[in-house]
Image 1: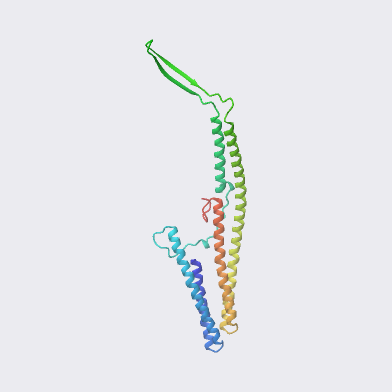
Image 2: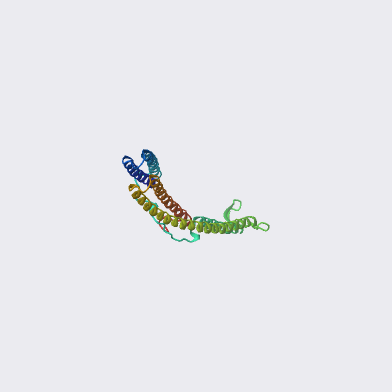
Length: 270
């Protein structure tokens, strides 16, 4: 929103300059009065667009202040991720959060099999006590051992259930690895495409700036009409807006890839 507000301010500056040039030509009689009226209408529209962009920027500042719980209100962002290139750090599929969760579930299911096998073993209990015989005025020491014999039930049901759960967890792990590999390949492709899009958008901005500069020179010399100048100015504004959109797409692509890799965006492996 800050970048779009700055772009709207620049559009207003260009529109004002073109309108003044058109009014100067109208006063000289080289352009009809209609051109001056059209220029004033374009300036009014540019001012309205700037007011809207500033309002959206201030609302974004307020949301950022609330979400980040910053004591003082945010009024400007000096370091923008729109201009920062992605790190492009590779990461193994096993580092993906979804794969790590699936591996932890598989390990837990394997441990439960061991628990059920231990519970299938006989539970031996020993007891020691003292018994008093009043008739003989004697005391006897008693000792006993109890051990259940699982002749028909050796906890097979629970062991088989734990083994089935382990097989299911192992299948989920394989599926998570395949999905993580596919998602990461798609995220890498989107990031590469966004980087190429930024380069193409920057080249388009450069070409549009040169076209507008030449059109402005031709307009002031009377060789190009105001309509042609308006077309080149619109192309320049669209090119710069496309460059902002391309950078925003690159940021989102880097964030998606970092999320799949389990790392912080724009900071490499953390």
